[in-house]
Amino acid sequence: EVQLLESGGGLVQPGGSLRLSCAASGFTFSNHPMSWVRQAPGKGLEWVSAISNSGGATYYADSVKGRFTISRDNSQNTLSLQMNSLRAEDTALYYCSKARVVWFGVGGLDYWGRGTRVTVSS
Amino acid sequence: QSALTQPASVSGSPGQSITISCTGTGSDVGAYNYVSWYQQHPGKAPRLMIYDVSNRPSGVSNRFSGSKSANTASLTISGLQAEDEADYYCSSYTSSSTVVFGGGTKLAVL
Image (cartoon, rainbow over all chains, first blue to last red; front, side, top):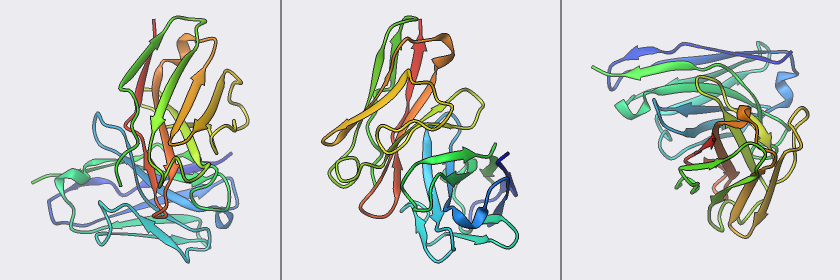
C-alpha cells in the first residue's frame, strides 16, 4: 500500500524558515518524480514544486522560486521542502504527491498524503 | 503562470450528466495532452480521476470521462450520484516545465 506521510509543518513568523518532509513507502520511490502541492484555507490547489525521480532536475512555481528548495533522498525514501523567507501568503496545507509515471508532468499525481499545515503569522 | 479557468460551480440531479470545462492557453492545455482531473471531498486529499486528457486510473468509475479541444479540456460525469458531490480541479503541464491547476469547481448533486 502506497503511503505518503508529511511532517514539519507549524507556525512560523514572516521571514522565517521551515523544512517539510514526506516519508514514502509502498512503492519504488526512486522510480517516480514527486511534487509538493499546497492549498490555502478555503482556496484551491496550487502546485509548488517537483523533483525528478533521480533528483537531478527540480521545478518551481514562480511564487516560490528562489525561496523554496525541493530535494529527495532515494536511500531513505524521503522528500523534503526547505522553505525560506516565508510570507503570509505561504500559509496553506502542504501535500506531498507521487507522479504516476517516471516523467514529470505526465500521467498525473496518483497518490497524495494527508498534508501538513503551515501557518505564517506574527 | 496563471491558473486555468474553471466554472466556480455546477450542479445536476442524480442520474444526469454534467460537464466541467477547463480553459487554458496554447502554452499549457493547448500544447500538451497532459491534462489531469482531481476530485476532492471536504477535508480529504485530492484523488486522481483522469490523466493525460482522457485516461482513467484503475478503480475510477467509467462514469468519469475526459476530453480536450484546442485550449479547453472537459470532464464529464454521467449518471450523477450523491457521492460525486465534491470539488473538481483540472491541471496541465506547461511549456515552462511547471504544472498549473484550475481554480476548482464545486459540484452539487441536487
